[in-house]
Image (tube, rainbow, N blue to C red; front, side, top):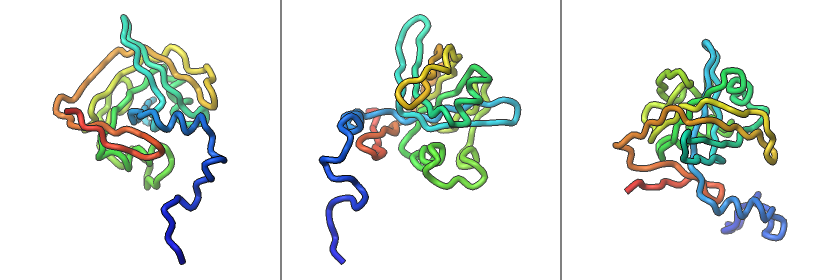
Length: 174
C-alpha cells in the first residue's frame, strides 16, 4: 500500500471542468433555506445566492428543481434563510442530502417558527423573503427570486460558514 497526496477519486487536472474550477475559487456563504405549510417542512442548503440592496432589497438563489424546498416554497411564496456558522457544517451536509439525518434534518438542530418558515437557532442571521419568481431555470437549477422583507443579524456571531474549493471554511467576522 502506498500513500499519495492526491485525492484518489478526483479526476486528473486535464479532465476537470474549468467553469467548476473557476466557481470553486469564489468563496460562498452557506445558508439553509426553509419553508413550512402546516406541519409540512422543507429545507435545502444553498450557497449560490446574491443579495442586492435596494428599496426593496432583493435576493436571488439557485435551488435544485427537484428538491422538496422548491415545491413547497413555490406553493407558500415565502422562505426563511438562515446564515450558518462554522458549528453548523454538519447541518449543511444534512440539508444538502450528503449526510445522514435520522428523522430528517430539522431534527438535527433547534428551530424557531416564523411566518417565513423555520429559522435556525444560533444562526449568524436570517432573512424573511417574499418570493416573486420561482420558475426560471438558470443552468441546472431553478432561480428563486424574492424581496427581503425581514432581516435579523446576530450581533454576537463571531463567524460564518463559507464554501470554497469543495470544502467548508470558517470565516471570522472580526
